Image (cartoon, rainbow, N blue to C red):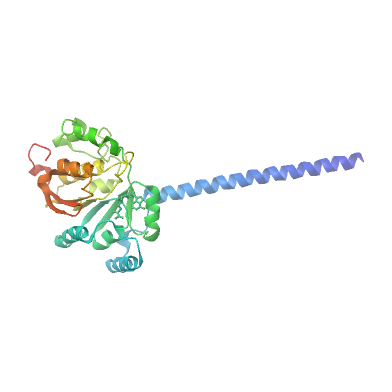
Length: 283
Ligand SMILES: C[S@@+](CC[C@H](N)C(=O)[O-])C[C@H]1O[C@@H](n2cnc3c(N)ncnc32)[C@H](O)[C@@H]1O
């Protein structure tokens, strides 16, 4: 009798040990799985995609784009005449271009395909949106970007323009590592700083609610890149949504009205020369 009670006690004890081990094992497994998923997501968002546009031939890119746009109901936000401005500039260069685009979207496959042998690189703030767009076109070349501004700060920031020594010292316009000027995109991959961009499209980040980053830093950083150009020729900067106050004012003052060469629909096209050819004023 005494031995039976003892053996039942040990059996129950064993069952408990098994149950606890099972729960610990399951929790450990779940933890490992979540960690692994985070590592994969980070790798995906940091370099975003292992298969870049350059690994497809121009013809393959075009075929993909035709199939996509022939079957999708969701089209880019820019109109035909707005898109045609950038299209003509890409064609007129007569060579593969370096094309930097602020924001991923339904137009990304189009921009990449219109520059088939060049470099088209996207800067996107929203990690979920990166995944949505790259799911259908993993060969797009995209990097994450963090903005330090809010749309609600736009008026304050523009009031201090020219007097703000951290951002507007004419002879020392720097983006890389410029933590003091929050208009400067200071943490981009080296590739973005080291390349000379022939075209820059500003159609992001979001700028339609107070907490959104607004386009101020994108506009400022594009202006700095254009001014720091060392190669011959101008930088073509395209700014969309100029019917909105921030895009209108910042385009006028930072990209400089005098470099505006075309205005079509809600798009402005600037041709900005390197800063050595500029006067003492910012514009
Ligand atoms: C005004 S959208 C422009 C997108 C692109 N130019 C186009 O025509 O599709 C700019 C930003 O909105 C954000 N966004 C988030 N969800 C979006 C959605 N469903 N459609 C478009 N943009 C979205 C992204 O961060 C994107 O960079």
